[in-house]
Length: 281
Image 1: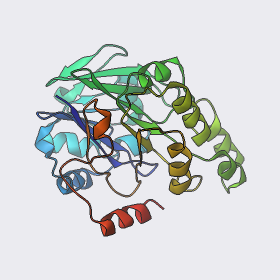
Image 2: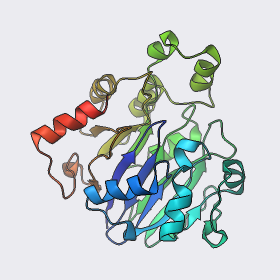
Image 3: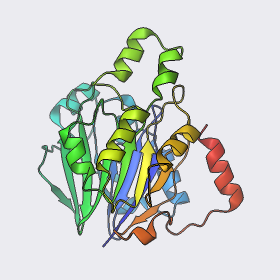
Image 4: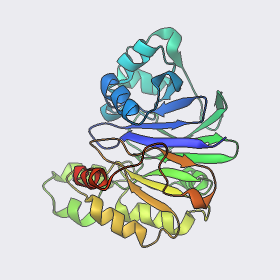
């Protein structure tokens, strides 16, 4: 089996990523409302009934705001560490709370999910790699720098959601207060365009078919700038910019580079594609 992936939303206003096979799927984070999550999935012809669990990376609001309602309504297990649960102040039904440990794979209907620590200003933050029959998809967002764990798993990915949060010059010259600029650019903050590009140039595997650049700052980045910057170094890897306003197409990850850039099921008209590009700004 292969993997189907989409970003349902990506940014400081909410994060939610879908990864699944033919039979089942998981969500990584649930930072948009239950209603909006399901609505966006329906537009992509994805069924919420296939979602078997939610994995939580950390307790910041843009990653957890939809969890309580989504989990309760659909009785979805929430995989979350004790520290993240406590610091997030979440009220989840006890029988739906499941803890996870770093580097210990969890099997869900043929999907293997491995969590690993990352550097971010949260209580117990983790990133994830989701695997299915030797096809690997990584979710690398909200990271201050590319630590050894990020590098190790990124090198194994056939597709990846990779943070490119801010342009360094835009952040430095923008209107954010000094303490916030320091927090964003620190080793416990977010990954800049330059840092993300360094990771890609040094460690992107030749077999990576899709790179979905994620969690772009509304005020300190520009989707067009990011697209141009990374496409120069992408080779045959398809570069996608995840929107903070709407879902991406569903991409079919097979391990076959010839499939790169081919969205699943839906075909988009020229007008729709133009509207998608406009909505990124």
